Amino acid sequence: MKLNERSVAHYATCNSPPDKTGFLFKKGERNTAYHRRWFILKGNMLFYFEERESREPIGVIVLEGCTVELCESESEEFAFAVKFDCAKAKVYKMAAENQAAMESWVKALSRASFDYMRLVVKELERQLEEVQEEARSSQAKSKPKKHQLQPQGAASFQPATISLQNATITGPLQEGVSSRENGVSWSKPLSVPNGVSDTQEDCSERGDGVRPPPVPPRRKTNGGSLESPVSPGTGCFSKLHD
Amino acid sequence: MRFNEKELVFLSRQPPERAAELGMRGPKKGDVVKRRLVKLIVNFLFYFRTDEDEPIGALLLEQCRVEREDDQVFSIVFLDEAERKYLFECDSQEQCVEWIDAVVKASYEFMRKNLIYYRTEIHRLTGKDPLEQYGISDETRFQVNSGLPPPPT
Image 1 (spheres, each protein chain N blue to C red):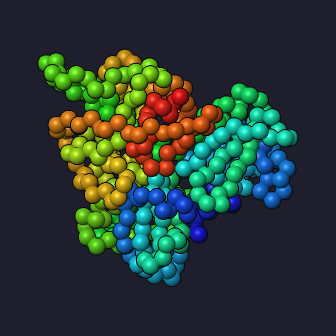
Image 2: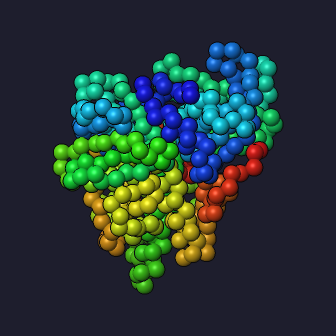
Image 3: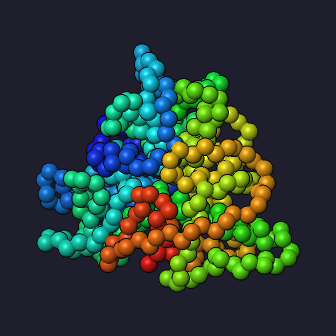
């Protein structure tokens, strides 16, 4: 399968801020020894370079749909693995230089997926709407609040995963140009990606409120493993941080 | 550059944000328009021959620009090689507008910008950082002035 490799490699080294960088030992794919590589995490892409100064990555691991697990290694302490759900999938074994680095990388990689980011954005979008709604309406709502801001680890938090109908908010960046770079123009939130979206663009003020979404099924997590949901709507927001 | 192709093919089978048969033309001189099944999944655009299950290829939609070329045509250009255009011919103006919108929003970087906006606004209106209770307020990708790479750990 083809990939726009040149541009992908460019993404690794361009001036958009990386989410995490550092040295890790990576188990070779042919030669099974561990090699020290320089890693750059950007979004859901984990690039690895021969040296920190290398201009081109040796390779990239697309992290969408992966799970990250701690693992036992005969030769390496602080080892962890990036695994995928598909048949005959590769297992990428890596090892950090110390406990803190390992934990930091495991955390970063398990939350690197596009879907996770989307959940966080939707959650904040929902919170902002709530705050704006409360600021607008001077009367107390008769319905009890269904979305309490809970401390970490408390009762399940419902992420906004339903399709937002008639949902239009004045976006953060609005420019009336017909050509759009990523992030230049925004007017409407994404709807849940199960099937084709057919939403309309509109930059007007928000209309009626959004119905609270049904509680998504709880994801099972094994000890030490944080799943990165492939399909959204199945991840519970606060559970992702357990 | 190596990449995990099997996993990417697996990704191409997930429920798409958007999918349609479009006329697609590659960026090389001499490339002609071909009918392709185009699927938008997370920040990837996969394209298939209309009767095949395996994608011919994938485009990572980061650091790219989407432009309206014509009533029913849009292009995707990657910032590192701006002279190479991928063209997509839609069946209607409406479809064209919808695809442009979807592709623009399909980047991680775009979501990051939105998130920073929401975070800043909520903080401005409530005095509280909405990310703090989830223990993710320190992550680099959520920082407002994130322009420098973080120190290696």
